Image (cartoon, rainbow, N blue to C red; front, side, top):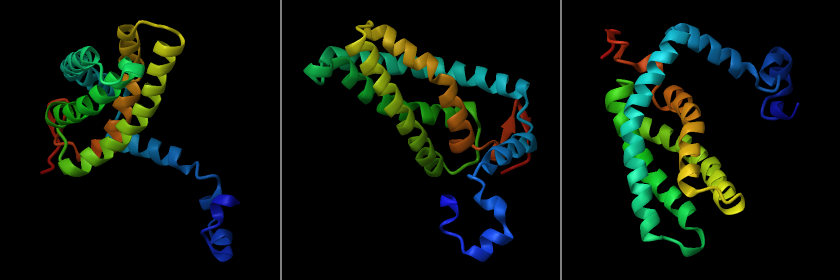
Length: 182
């Protein structure tokens, strides 16, 4: 009943489903997926396009990481510091590239960037923790740790920014077919 605290007793009695641990978001997401036609084939095609653009983004991010690692931003945590700074700059560059080339969204750029920022920030916390764990506790080579983070969290990044920063409902086209939105 904790999640019901903001509702009056009458509202809770009238709409008990509102307080069922807020798991209705899963059904809402499934409905949204069905409404935009996000089939396995569409997911595969979009993920391949995402990865194609992502190859350029990864090369940019790795080059930036390499330079920052050589500069040694923080003696105590050289690789982790290079990861954080290159990730922040790389995420801004990647968002622009995905906005222009991958998703063809009509979503307002600043709103999309704001939503992407929250996705990237959440992932940055997780991936930075992994960098620290892999490099400084398990002594994994920092280049392998970079590759691990980039590959393992890539699909999660795709799903998050696709549904939050580039909502499919606002696509100009999908798989080369114009959707009739302006």
